[in-house]
Image (cartoon, rainbow, N blue to C red; front, top):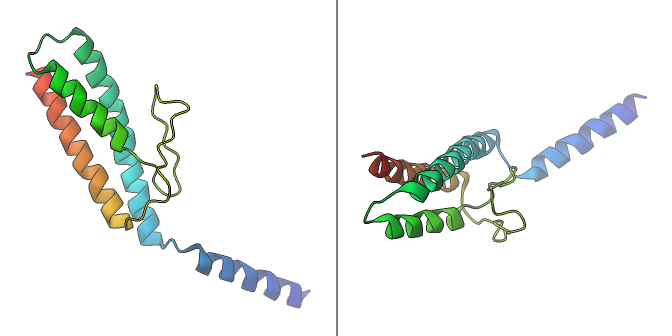
Length: 122
């Protein structure tokens, strides 16, 4: 019985060691995912505001919003669910960025989208 438990423990440790995602990386992925969800929510609000907007810059804002939507990508360990894009693949293959770079990219996108939102409110 002890041998079986030891073998199970060894196999578990090998699997965990081979997974490649440290706790720090996973924490950054989780934070990036929270930012991504916020981005998606704000994008929905912006799209609703643009429908009734009379701003002269409306077309260029719509273009930037579309580019930001298209630049969203799946974060390792999380699935990207972008309303209105069902069936559209945003995985873009394997992401070759560090966890920090993924977090930074989403933090930057969130800043950009908030700036657009503020422009529409003013």
